[in-house]
Image (cartoon, rainbow, N blue to C red):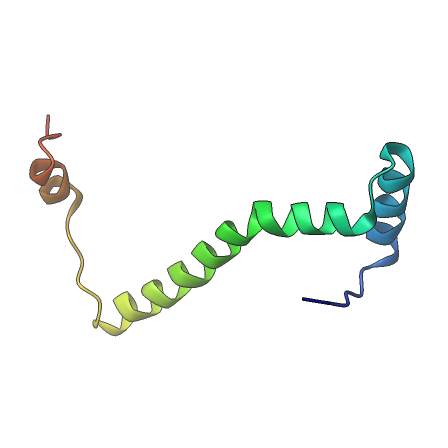
Length: 75
């Protein structure tokens, strides 16, 4: 799927230099960066949503000692 990105000049310059140095395309490196970090970005978004539900009292919480006991990991 085609996509356009506007990058800060510093990042664009670094991407250009890396591409020139390695002979790989800027698209290759942009794709690699997205693939490697999208899980972290999704997790951060999900944790923000869960934190909001916990604060609102609508998300169930399980104390750590109960969770450890459930998996046989208590001291």
